Length: 520
Image (cartoon, rainbow, N blue to C red; front, top):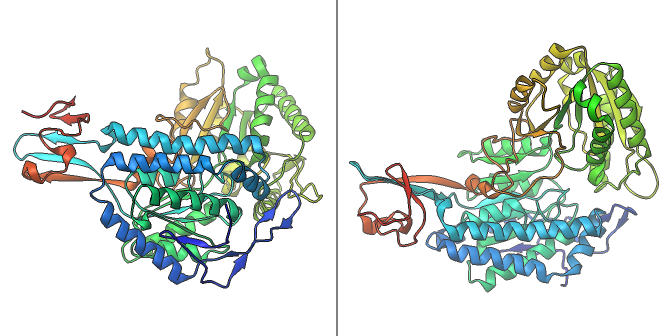
């Protein structure tokens, strides 16, 4: 594939803007040779308007055809071959093994949504045949703006889960590519543009906009054609987009996943039974991918004891011995340094190991362990700020009551974890942790998000702006759909999934019972 540095707008390449930026190899800090053009406001408008036209044309397209498009996208991504892997590795430093697995996850997401569409029950067709006769099903909301993430250049980027779920819902998408991996983004844009054309979909079904600053995203969210936003990134970025969407004359929903500290509670009985195994697992989780996961375990809560102190020393030693990994880019490195510095400004924080950049040619930061008391974290909510990197903070509690009070004071998170023994009375702890997260984990670690229908990747604010939704798994489709009910509408005028004959043969809820049979 030949890279151009251009934007991709409804099947056409465009480079109207004079603002240029470049990719950077995080291992060497060397700038790439190709200049990428930040989109102009007129290019953003053109992409959004093309998406609106596509939405109007796609209203009558059957789910099976959208499924074919998703399968085509997966095939086109596969056809990019090793060029995609090597390009992403140069831009992110994530390594070929990680990126190979992430490519499989990305194409797998597309194919999973295709299967969902062909089965049909996702439409949630509900029929009440009494008087009045009311029939309900799900419909696409319209054009969706997608913001690519830095840490998942495949699975949460141009062709990632947000894009897959929005397209599966029947919504055209306009993707704001992440400036940390623009060449990788263009390869995906080429694949998706080819898929849209091959399947005969409207050209405005997909557009991709490049941009190094915040202007492109702000213009996109503000455009009246956009009906919803999917975002994965920082709290600061997600909140800015949320506020911009709310400030529109006609506000729109923002489904923003904004990071998390993912509290881990470890009981004394668990330490007594398997402290070494927990320490090894914890260090592996904190340092996985150089700590650049939204599920990184950044807050560890224990009752103070000799066993807890010994455990913290063991974790600190393992963290210090583990090699420092490469960070994604300069912005991530600078943000991590700033976040750790702000945490250390609190006099109640003790640095046990790390706490500084590791130097050298690459963007690196030493594996870092911090420690504080429960009273300090309850007094300063800033200590719950995410450190996006290989950093974790231990919180020592005076006793069981202090531990529970501290959990009560936690903000919303994507995950919460409890390490305990099966014979312990910890129902109340699980209940408290359940209120703070979208996924509760028992005797395991939060990194690693299974892409399965039961997965809930979301949580109370500030982890997300929409805790009732998920950004992982097939239920993610419902962020970009809305229910419409039809009352006393003649059968011939109803959408096919709601007609008496059930011509699609899908599973429906009819008068309180699930059935695939025709009515009457």
